[in-house]
Image 1 (tube, one colour):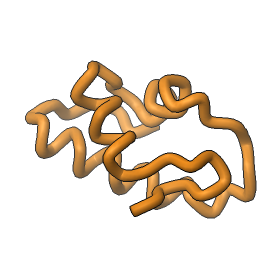
Image 2 (cartoon, one colour; image 1 turned 45 degrees about the vertical axis):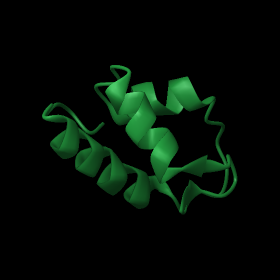
Image 3 (cartoon, rainbow, N blue to C red; image 1 turned 135 degrees about the horizontal axis):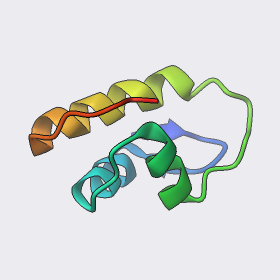
Image 4 (tube, helix red, strand yellow; image 1 turned 180 degrees about the vertical axis):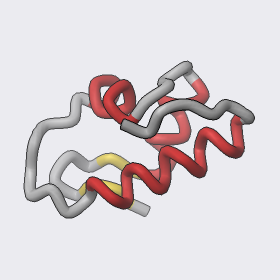
Length: 63
């Protein structure tokens, strides 16, 4: 499922970023080439990021 339609970023993309070492939402955005869009995805991205961290066993800042 897409987390961000404007940037075509999926939940799998977020999980992949975390598994490759992203420790923050900002790092996920950078790794995915995230560009400002409508902004509707901000909360969903934070949720998926937290889930990805939990499933990978890492915990860090969601900002």
